[in-house]
Picture (cartoon, one colour):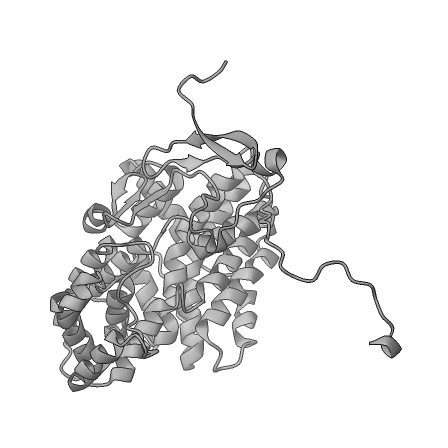
Length: 432
């Protein structure tokens, strides 16, 4: 039966006109459904970076960059960060609804029971050079998981998909913490089942056999918020990479490893590391005016990292929450003896008051504040992106599950605008 409410856009090419269906989502702009465009016209669309292209339909995360709004399954990120915790948010992203108390307890119990790594995986860590970047270790060990957990690699089995999901959420903190321990030459700290997700991660990073470690509740809460705020962010580069890998039928461990590799880029997950490196380059608060002038100079290659966002044309909603945690952590740990954090606080103050920053809406973003928090906790900048990957794994898995469950799944195959040589005839050496 014809849908009388269906809208169409008319596209005219030379003398030929075609009708293009207009699809409407529950939130956000309508989209032109161009799936039949090549068949009807012989033309492709050209959209470098896919900034005007919807690659899928999804009901997980929604972003309104103009309003500065981020929703997980319809819930504002600010509300979740204030009232919820990471594992509850993980359940929400994966299942679509907030859990009941029994569902939540069962989910937490299952995650807790899977935090251990196969003991033979220790050999993977010890096979890396001592000065290997932790992100390289995390990416490699994550990919190796498919060699150890054969009973959860069949993507056509719903139960195996569920087991793989629980395993990765549970084991990524252990992998990331051990990558850190290996990089600083300390013995690995095993997970403890009596601790919650964020405190358990912190004890695996900072505890040593010689003394007892108890994480401060403020630091645990700040880490939990970092996890929540980075859990998912719609169809970004790494999420799209996971989906593209999944479209080929690759096992879930390989798909998440692909996402981790993409996240490593400084334009994506490495942004918070780049922001801290910038603060260290500035060095001391008295040099801030010099760098502000450099940032305002269009002819100067210097760019302020951690300010503004490609998607958000207003205040990044995550940064408001992260600022609160940053203030709490800095009050707890102090900034008097840390010049990098002194620069961060002064630069934040200027950015929120300077007309240039306000006019261009260059507000401090989530990368700026998360970098401050992690620096204050004594994490080296090389650990910032692995921690990001730990948090984002939940979002990747939710997106992966959504895609795999789609009966209309197709392997990703972008097209191109070819600008190379036309047909040429091979010539032998003596004629070249």
